[in-house]
Length: 271
Image (cartoon, rainbow, N blue to C red; front, side, top):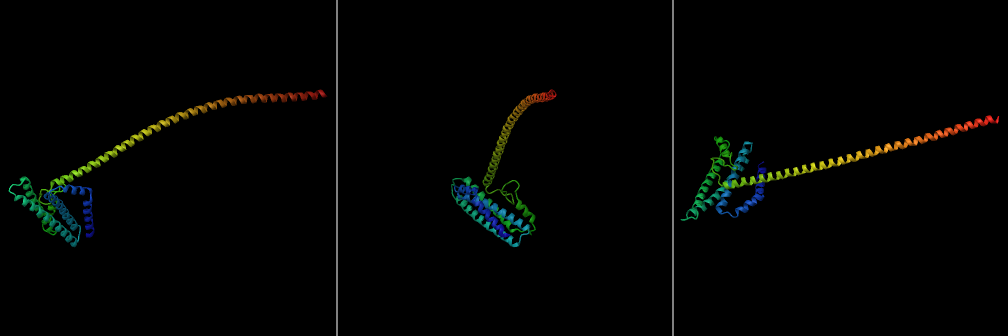
């Protein structure tokens, strides 16, 4: 079970590293200064740590084994160690800036100081979360820490409502999501427009077919009238033929009668 989850996590890491958005982020980071680059890394890693803590909590509650919980805790500690190393580098950069008598941008130096302190607070909090167990008497507090301020922020911080390390990164993610939604809406609009065009074409084709049917009906009616006229003409012709036949029959009968009368007359005259 644990190996399946590990494989799934690795696939997620590979996808995120190879996805177009990840490539764009890498290209954008190429022009950043070292402190900003580390800040973004800490921001991303801290979110991953909090998600890993939630996953461990869910796995434990669903009946996960002690071995799985121990492996999850080890991975979380490794991630925290990596973040601490990055924050140490950030602090070294800040110390170097603070030692200058006349820094080029005092406001930026002050901002770096606040960010380093905030990162340390985040580290302290996730270390506290990592060390606690479900059997802890303060399990309810831990659930509250895990949930934190997750109601109103896409990447809200668990725990003490700590400010986000890199709010710009979250805003960028929100803008990218809005861009994706706009693209989906645009595609949907194009689909609706195509359906409208298809419906219009179908209506026009139906009108053309109705016109063709009307023309066919007119032709059928004309042909029926023509057939009726032919029938009338044939009837008249047949009536004329029948009249001629009656005249011929009458003539034949008259001839037969005349022949019979002549025969009878000749018989009487011969006696």
